[in-house]
Amino acid sequence: MTRRSWRIAASLAVLALSLGALARALAVSDRRAEGFAALGVLLLAILALGLALRAQEERLRRTRRDLVRTRLRAEACVEASPDGVVLLDGVRIVGANPAFRRLLAIPPDEPIEGLDLLSFVEPDDRPRVRQWLEQRLAGIPEPDHLEITAVRRTGMKVGLEAACARIPGDERRTQLVLFLRDTTGRRTVDVRSRQLERVEALVDIAETIVAEFESVLSRIQREARAGRTAGDGAAERFEAIDRAASRGLALVRRVRMFAPGSGDEQNRRPIDLVRLVRETAADFLRGLPAGFGLEVRTEGPKRIVVRADPVSLRQAIWQALQNARDAMDEGEIVVRTRVIDLDETRAASHPGAHRGPWAIVEVRDTGHGMTEEVRLRAFEPFFTTRGPRAAGLGLTSAYATARALGGYIELDSEPGRGTIFRLAIPLAEDAELPEDVTAEEPDPRARWRGRESILVVDDDAGARESIRELLERYGYHVEEAANPRDALERLRKRPGVDLVLLDMVLPGRSGLDVLRRIVRRWPGQRVIMLSPYPLPDQEAQALAIGAADTFRKPATDPDLPRAVREALDRPPPAPEDVDA
Image (cartoon, rainbow, N blue to C red; front, side):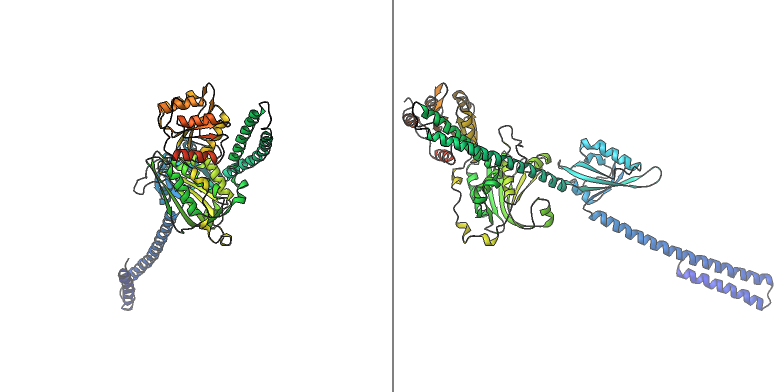
């Protein structure tokens, strides 16, 4: 009723009561007086009822207003929630908040109402999730939450923690509201902790092996060199012992690479990270085949000073570049250097990290990307997706280097979207900086790196392995052949080997005979002849036939990489006398 209606009703009531009183005063008949009085009472009752209805209407209006406000607040909370919230009718989606779409990479314009929630769940998890939802619909409270694996629209898997509540309706319909929280960050921290434990265990093992082997092999080498002067043909035997000990020591140094925290402390000094990255990238670019590009971007400071062993840090960056190269058939590699301010939240996700400024080296490729399973296992020792020829220790070594420097490594990758390798290192304190950090000499061994293909021909498996491991550290692609027949077959089926390392002494055939066949069949093929001991006549003859150079074993660092690089950079020699 409007205010005007209330005024009219009140006026009529007063008028009826007045007429009743007037009738009594004028001695009007009792029946009429009673009629006027009854009418007045009725109008008063109507007035009271109207007032009560008006008060009830006002209360209802306030209740509706409060309900609207509560609903708007609840909707705002749900919309702003970082956790996914889904309203379900059975397993069918009735509605969802934006966070649910973000969790599962669902485009904003894609309709999801009416879709089966289980279509977003990994197939192996669907029976378990369905049973849990059915239990919740039936009012069974346990378990109150569930760990599930969902599949994003991109195909990437994501770990979620789900909680559920019933919304009772009529007897035939009960809905569920589902709350979903991304647990990938928590799982990543757990995985990184386990990786750190594995890497540290590997480092402990490597340190023990290194110490024992180095002591034994050094003693053998000293005794062998002391016995070279003996007569009765013993010199050759001692020479063989010396070569074996040298190979063992090379292997020990190789193992020590995977324990960078144990041996590089004394070599750490303040270095310019930007300069180191540019030099490493320049060396790596030289060996990239056609179809690949490499760009270095310096974002922020032009000089970023960190305290590290330049050789170990260069190797870690090289491994990141190598990983990017191996992930692509062709494409662009982008390397960025910058400084970030690490906050507490991000620092907490990396064991041992602290808040503050950090130096960042980022290597981005446009390759095939990694699945979640591969990404989480990428730093595990001996894990590889490149077949049995790969050792699976490249990224493990880079990870160990980062940890030894007090830093960490991140990998961001999805199938079809490439990979971002991010190396973070604490900045050096100003008090530790020399007057001119940029004046330091670059690592002289960097000039011997390359990306060419090399074929090692040697019947000694230990020698082949030692040479392959040494040259692969310098970035070369190395293949092996145990005899001349395998070597010639390899060259025949797949020509294009940049350099052949050919042992002078081979079973069943002289190395010089094999060299002649190679020079005849593939003119211009670069070959370095390897001699196990001084053979001046044969070495001179090899150069005359067309060898690029000769090298006396054992393969030492950096002597062999230097000889390889110099032979590759020179034009192939013209043979003087193939039939010599």
